[in-house]
Length: 58
Image (tube, rainbow, N blue to C red; front, side, top):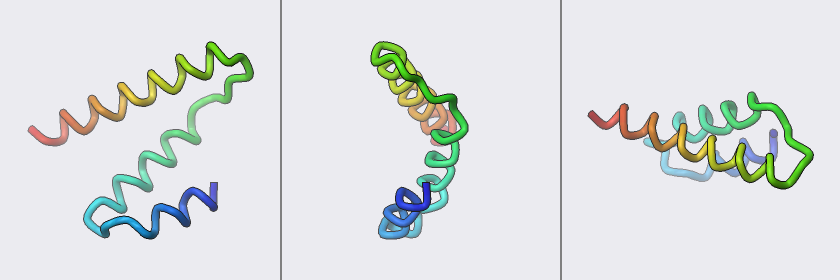
């Protein structure tokens, strides 16, 4: 996780807190060992993040 957090340091400071929160949210989710489940979990995370952004922009 620290490597991903290091990458997030190079983003615009205005979005850095959002990036850090998204990274922590991703690591809070369970790991999946089956490819199909990984794809579903990735899609679910993407949809949840998009929905949170849309709710925040109201």
